[in-house]
Image (cartoon, rainbow over all chains, first blue to last red; front, side, top):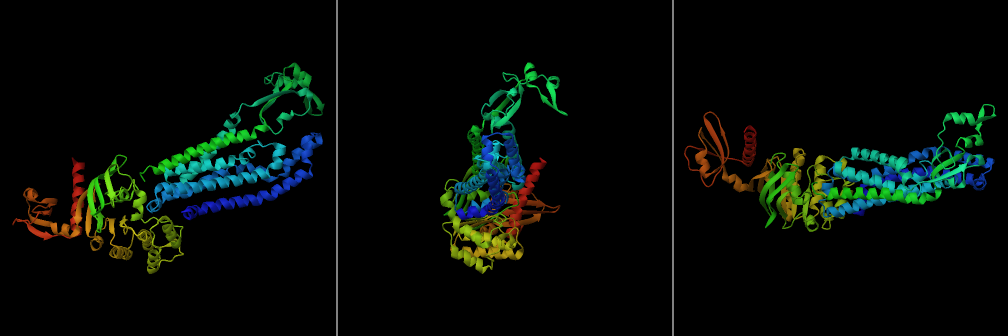
Length: 322
Length: 293
């Protein structure tokens, strides 16, 4: 039966394997390069000492990652694609009527469901785990410079959340597919629903997992932002007064406080701004140290949804009007 | 001994009854044809018997067991070939046999290989690339190699050409001769069944219209023709299955209770197909009446 289970999802497993191999072929050499740049450019030293020359080194380092770094946000669609693909064989069984063949052999329906679901879940876990492992390894130097909350390609592809994403996409496509019994529309619909859910969590919900911190510092200090903001996920940053209330003086004040420092370029006069109640910068942020806490919450969220959806799919299959 | 026994069996989908109030016994060792037009409830009946569907009303017992609660013990004893013989099209014939071997503890691999060899089915070919007749034979092999006591076939020959149809039914008959298993096969084509089956169940509009041994059924039914008259008198003694009238003549299909002693009627024999058609026609005319009233 194990052979049969694998045989039935052979195409999908092979596709997932091919995708993983392709990614490995792209990212492993690139990752080795990136690590060597990291050592060669003395990036670690620069992270400790923020001299102007180092600021340049650090901002250049992002460019070292090249095009792959700009491609990475698109790769966050992969867990969804692979997850829904793994649901396809089971839905095909329902669409083509072959479940009538399987359920009238000597094996009971409950056992058949248990084995098929276990294999699909195990494959999803393996695929998600390998994706996460590859990207976490590749991004290690980037994480040191830009943090693990970096845009939509750091957090979403690292740690343990990719595993939960694949599982969620699988559960979604199985629940929709079992109810609908049409493979292509079910897979497409669930993928769209997956993307919508992810966008909602990425863009709105995640920053609210834990109340963000806030930090206010004087701009007259003219130095860089405080270290506590290093690699943090900055949700908001702007001029404010000493208490951190956002500056609301408008353009006129900025105009008045500007002074020409160089031909055609103005800098803001800190004292002038302070007089107008805007001598401070305030940042609202999630500190870098919360990375694993956020990973845990997001994993629990998506894995929980996945379990609910998988349970729904099983319940629909066991309800007998077949 | 009965192989399949139902009492008041019914299955509803939404508000429509696919099968209703079905009470019958299919004796063990018989080869029973389940006949009826499309939508008569044949598929539902077979799905209820093999436990793919639960009854909405009444009960069904198969080989003395409840298909719903005793699936683990019952499934190995029942072979089932669903309509259009679903198989995994991407599997080769060999892989399909392996599926049978892995899913059935009672699997007879020798029998399966012998059958496949005899039929000249290419083991390495994908099932999707086989002809309809070959696919049907693979599906039948899968069911037979379970060594079932009861074989259920849902419209096994509907999609086959006449030659493949003949070969398929031949295979079924050989298997029956060899093992003595009970067979229930549904069909809306009566002509093929007479050679293969010894029992008949006619389903129409979700209900049992007639059930019994084919020889007895044929012996009991008569066509009476005579001058146009009311069927009332005959109906008092015999069951009038169907009455049709022209301007001057009346024809009655009756299930005679003993002999018909009435000089006004001319008696004719009926073959099985004519009898089945009379029952199915009766259902149609009743529906028309229901619609008209």
